[in-house]
Length: 357
Image (cartoon, rainbow, N blue to C red; front, side, top):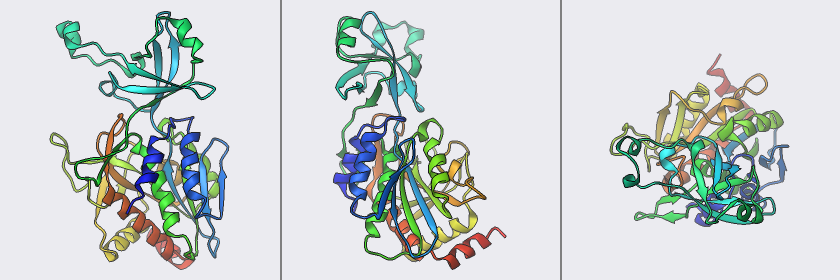
C-alpha cells in the first residue's frame, strides 16, 4: 500500500520549476534509508542510487517541479501581476489561492482576482483572462506595503491546496500530482528493493524544470548515461462525462505509454513490461498521445540512444490547483517497476535490444 504520509509531504511541498528545493528535500528524506548514495546535478535534480552487481544502469525519473507563477510586477495599488511557469489554462486561475515565497523564506497568501458575471458585459462574461494577465490580491493598500513584506520581482508563487482522500479513500486529491507522483514512485521502487540484490544499478531521480522544457531530464540523462530509462508521469484519465473514453482511467493499473509527442516507446521494452504485468496479474492499459511529452523526450536521446519508455498514472484535472489519482494505480506501477529491476540482467537487456535488430 502507498505510504500516504510520504505522498502528502511530497505533494504539499512547494516546488515550481526552478524552485524545487523544498520538494527534493522531502524526496531525499525518504531515499536516505534505501540508497547507497544520493547526488545532485548542477540545476537541482536529485538522484538516489542503489548499487548493483554489474555495470548495468536503470534510471527512473519523475519530474519534481510543478506549475506555478513568479512575481512579474507590483502595481501602485498593491496588486501583483504574474508570469506563468508551465502550462496554465486561464479558467483554472481566478479566485484560487497561492503562496508567495520571499527571498528570506516568508510565506504570503494571495488570491487571484475574479470579477463576478454581473460585473461584466454580455460579451466579456465568456472571455477567459490569459494566465499572464492574471493578478494576485494579498490584501494590502499600496506598493509600499507589498515591498515592506519583502516581496520582489521573481519570487515564486505556488498553488495552495490540501491532500485529501475522497469519498472512496483510494481516490487521492492534491496539488502537484504532476509530477510528484512520478518522483514518489521512483523513490518507493528503491524502498521496495531495500535489501534485494540486483544486477543493475538503480537510479531514482527527481528531475527539475520539466514543465518548462525537460531540462532536468537532459542533465540527469547525460550524468547517468543509463542503459534503460523510465519516465514516470501522469496522463489524462479518460473517464470524464464529456471527454474521450478509453481503458486509460483511474483504477486501471499501470499505464504503458506507446507514444506521445516526444517519444515512441522502445518496442522491446514495451513488450517486456506487458509480459511482467501479465505474469504478475497486474492490470494495465496502453496509451497513445499524439501531443505533449515527458522526460522520455530527452532520456531516449542520450549517447547512442537509451532503451526507454514512459509509465503513467491517470490523473483528473492536471495543471490545476486540485488533481486526483487512484492509489491502486500507484501501487501497481511501483510493483511492476520493482519487478523489472529485479529481473534485468545483461542477457535480458540484449534480448530487449534485439527487438530493434
